[in-house]
Amino acid sequence: MAKDVIVACDFGTAEETLAFLDRFTGQKPFVKIGMELFYAEGPQIVREIKQRGHKIFLDLKLHDIPNTVKKAMRSLSRLDADIVNLHAAGSLAMMSAALEGLMRPDGSRPLLIAVTQLTSTDQTALETELLIEKPMDEVVMAYAENAHRAGLDGVVCSPLEAGKVHDRCGAGFLTVTPGVRFAEGEKGDQKRVTTPAEARALGSDYIVVGRPITQAADPVAAYQRCVKEFLG
Image 1 (cartoon, rainbow, N blue to C red):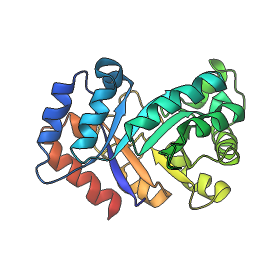
Image 2: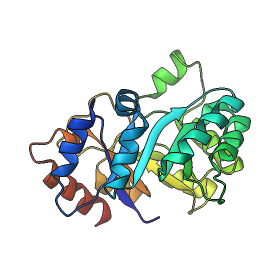
Image 3: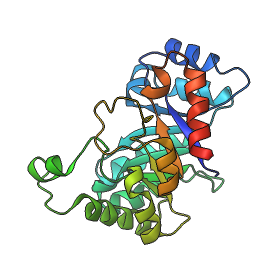
Image 4: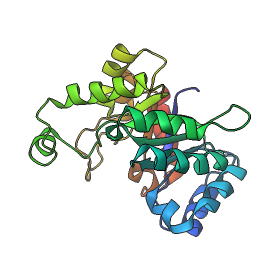
């Protein structure tokens, strides 16, 4: 899959989401459907957006015992998303089970990526709340290596770690990176952030951008700016 900008459609209803996507006349942005929208509208919103011709990153971050995740992934595989994810913290066994569950009868499956550490987590939270005393880079690399060992296609990490993940796990191991803001934008609850151009220079394969696009006065122009800055 080529590098791309994924628009995080973090809306609470199908109506809001589809009205937002209707603004992109003649364009079909890659779309992220996260927990807020999926829990509000269920699988049908994935089917509807897919039928409209969009690629979909289904961002549900599964994290449970291996058997439960395997069965959940079996259900998600029927929705024809392009990318799904889970938490790398769930262990090698959980990630391996997820891959088994995702495989369809015809041998196809969505790409599966693992969340390393959320981009809202900084070193202080890592140590004082999660009780992980290793440096952030070291933790992210260890989680990425586990995901690679389990046979996954890539990880979710910050752009700041993308190049290091490629160095450790190979150029073909995908880095999907939230925590992207325009230079003049607010960081919000994100801690490890870059601009789209910086993410490109650091080696991100995909950037996930929400509020800088969805809350812009002109979302289409903001999306086009993001694509231009990221893809060059």
